[in-house]
Image (cartoon, rainbow, N blue to C red):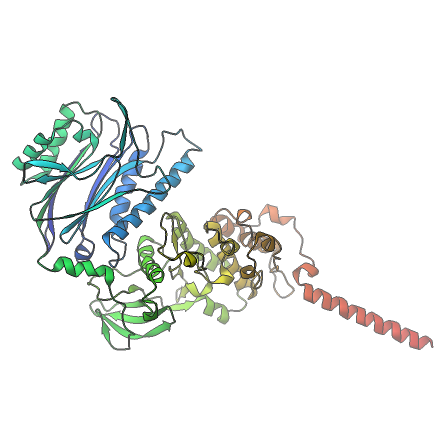
Amino acid sequence: MASKFKTDQLKISVGQYSDKGRKKTNQDFHGVCIPTEPQLSSKGVAIAVADGISSSEVSQIASQYAVTGFLEDYYCTSEAWSVKTSVERVLAATNSWLHSQNQQSRHRYDKDRCYVCTLSVMVIKSTTAHIFHVGDSRIYQLCDRHALEQLTNDHRILVSPDQTYLSRALGINPQLEIDYQTLHVEKDDIFVFVTDGVYDHVDSNFIIATINANGGDLDRAAKIIVEEAYQRGSTDNLTIQVVKVEALPGPGTSEIYQHLSELPLPPILEARMVFDGYRIIREVHGSSRSHIYLAVDVETNATVIIKTPSIDLQGDPAYLERFLMEEWVARRINSAHVLKPCLQTRNRSFLYVVTEFIDGQTLAQWMVDNPKPDLETVRNIVEQIAKGLRAFHRLEMLHQDLKPDNVMIDRTGTVKIIDFGSTSVAGIMEIAMAHERNNMLGAAQYAAPEYFLGERGSPHSDIFSLGIIAYEMLTGKLPYGTQVPKSRTKASQRKLQYNTTLNDDREIPVWIDEAIRKAVHPDPRKRYEELSEFVFDLRHPNKAFMGKTRTPLIDRNPAVFWKSVSFILMIAIIVLLSIKFAIK
């Protein structure tokens, strides 16, 4: 159904039609998204079409994931990012996920059951069209109503007159090589998105004539073109989108929004001042890296948290990139145990992030107030943190800075993970200087040992951090003391000695101690494979742990053991001396 989207600025009409044709399944997928303000101006409109490979029985999943994932995730990126940065990062993450599915499926299916597809994307922002393309679907521009100009290049290799294969596509390689170009857009410009099932069988003259004859009903034009391709013998899926630019922003608007990617850092905010529609109540926390404020949205009266970067770091691009990444991460994750961002309803004048207000305290403060929590309370907190972490891991994200200060407990007892400045997203390389990429971003005492070897993290790394938190809640200490950050070789890490949670002051079952010991093992390969396994073992005695006996005192607490031995020896000496003098 053709749609006209009217705003005070950018306005387009879209007609689209897709059919499986002579195939059993339609492996094409297409979509368009036109947001409301302020995102219409700051992010633009997005159109996408994907085509799965015919040899695969699951490539329609890849096509659907590529299009829907792009249309959702692009609008989750910060308005402060350029279109190029936003799209490339989203597509890199999408490609990483598809490639990982292919790596897994090769162990279960034959090589033709691959999650691979083409993708052609256009983002129209202000008066510029940004085109991103990989594969052999195509984007054309209808020039002066009488000529079709192909804007994309086919990434297709000809083997024979009857056989071709894709040289580039989503999901084939771990790194994505994608074409990018920009194009100035004018009123009444028409763009055509098609898959090969259409353009291989319908000539450009027919497409031009059909669009010109049905300019008021682009859906009808799209359907006629697809049906013509089918009648001319197309054996493939058939998809076409026709996009017409009805109106563009007024003079000067393009320049205004071009500078959104260069938003200034906000000044230090004071209580009672109104900042971009938020009334500041007070500063919650301030550091050399950021400032956090409690505020009220003047329009909705909702209480929110505003986080601003420190002015002292305005010359640090790596830090600013991580700051902007926080907003994207927060928008992508939907979990009751992860901090939620607030939707932006007004244009921003500065660089900042707005999130929900959690009425509660950090886990760090909670542990100070509850130095000896019961085992069931510890289990409950660990389980909620694990649910939040699973939301990260499902999207191939690692939190990488899980610590008590980054976990909040509200007044209802709900636990939420906060602060995503160190979060790693698969397929995305942070913009940072080489020496900064090797620096620890998270708290050293909760970081997994592999980070200190310069290795990349994995879900096992987040499991390690969760295990440390569980241990600390039960004991008030760390399982390896302060030795992990000092152990920067594999040899030194093999010498790390786990200090058991078992002692004479707490009645902790041996199997609980063994579960935590496994979660915080220095070798990531010897930790739990899944968060769910760790959580399960905290509630159900693992048979593998049941045969183990209470650790000897010399291993549990060497200092106490040797003090006890010394005391006993001293008593023995005194007794012997007393006997000796008594005999004399």
